[in-house]
Amino acid sequence: MGKSFEIEGTLKIINDIQTFPSGFTKREFVVEVEDGNYPQMIKFECVKDKTSLTDGFETDDAVKVTFDIRGNEFKERFYVNLNAWKLEKLGGSTEAAGEVPNYGDEDAPAGLGDPPADFAEEEDDIPF
Image 1 (cartoon, rainbow, N blue to C red):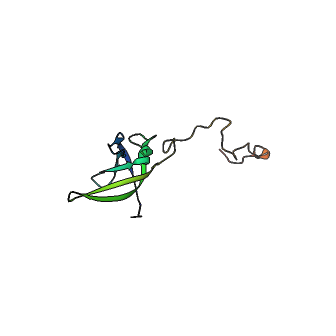
Image 2 (image 1 turned 90 degrees about the vertical axis):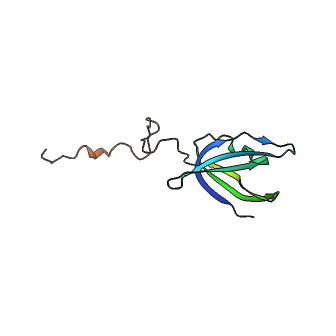
Image 3 (image 1 turned 120 degrees about the vertical axis):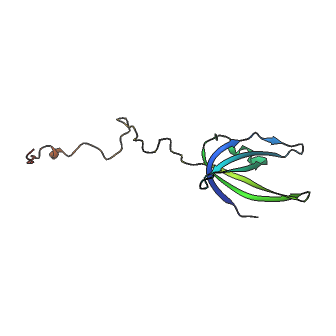
């Protein structure tokens, strides 16, 4: 097929790895994607060596999933699978939005040194 897709959302469910008698392994996970008034719960699967993709992730993580669409027929029924092969965390910042970082003396940003020596010597002729 060759065409890959990407989608961003919130990781909601991470299932255990399933192993079948043939030795085939897969793991399914669900990502919630905002879609107007009705969020969509989209199930992806990782197969074989990709079952470890979700290791290190937790539910409610913001993620981007890269996946392929796979389809097959079995006993005159058709099935579609979203085969994930890459999973990334979004918003890597550990600071909350709008929060001011707390710098210690050693961590102060550069360029905020002492004022020029002649700065304090100027007379202020403002009447108040």
